[in-house]
Length: 404
Length: 151
Image 1 (spheres, rainbow over the protein chains, first blue to last red):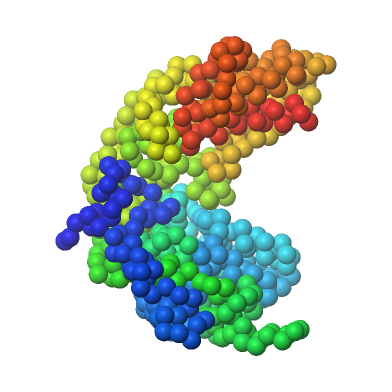
Image 2 (tube, each protein chain N blue to C red):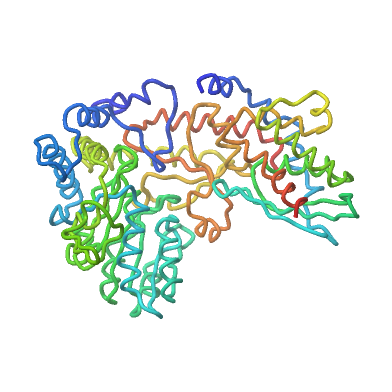
């Protein structure tokens, strides 16, 4: 197997141990080169000009859509809408589908594990429409019991929102079962794939998700490019989210007709550079193979869990079974605040996240104020885990005489 | 910018987690509800979750008593406790002056020796001004107190 780390200039130029890929990943040379090439050879405003260069920019942009569509096995490229990120994709669904389909007294069900971006938009929709927002809660293992799914997703529920992988606990949720249950009671299912699509093979038709969203920057692509997958028949019926250039068909002084999907949802000049980068990132991942990506990460996570649980001053949160966990490990150094841990780790060139991870309701439910989070990707190695463990030992050394 | 990054690197953690800071961060004598508080203010850093409530008992223009409740990192807790020690017994006007000196110090603006002397133990937090990611932890209590006094 090739040395993956070699492809990442930022990891080669510095001696950092980067364990915050759940926040954003580093970018391989191949992605950086693809974006440079776009600006050196193909840049123009897509869908606008009649000249060759603009046509080329259009082709490049639409080709990226096809590549994304195949990557998650959508039935056609028109089901892929480019956005800025997962949050924008979820806002689009909440504003365009949610506000137009939720009626007073309807229920929206999400899990307590949701990132704020799959939570706050649904709070807004339920307040605006006098609907109820209900939560599926987790057990002590950090997973949603099947009985909880059955108990909460009942007739009257119209939208179910679920993260495929928790960004705090790393829990892999049974999305297929949740989507099936949602459909049985007449609800549509919105799957947040921000923490799953980068790490495992995701097939939207197999899951039967009505919507699935993710961000490019968490899977080697640049910042500012996100994806909304939606079933064509749903997207067709939905009104536009943003209005403006390139999303229209005819505009009269008082009336406008809109372009078909996906253009209907892509107002204004789009982030072609981002789409090009995302295509290059997908090509990079496909070359490794998503099954291998998953295997590489499983090995690292397994090793990290083993090493972390050897330290008696550490508490690890979330599932311990490797088949139920992806990408992310949350933990605390007992008696030391995560920000202080992160500062000491930073001093040892180890980058981790500390805080509430944009999931305040989950932390409150677990009676926690904040945690440390190490998140991993294909470029991480066992040596990175060793450096984390060493730095944690140093942290404990500094603070132990003060721990009460 | 490059210079700034170098400065952070040169920092030794022992200059940050000093005995003064660690003692205050684990001390509890300023951390409680205040009986007969005349006013209170809540402050938090949404991105990191540091969350404190400062209660104050004024006697005319004099700060007779101050206490806090809440949670946060060692730096935020220590900074709150140090500030309370400093401001107890001062007049409102003096307190605002001292808060301004502290905030100036954290912004790495010019502070005179006399001014540094006036903020006593809060000097111990000076090195945190070299850690951009942690400045807000140190400042939280002081900004919260400032808006409490200006209420």
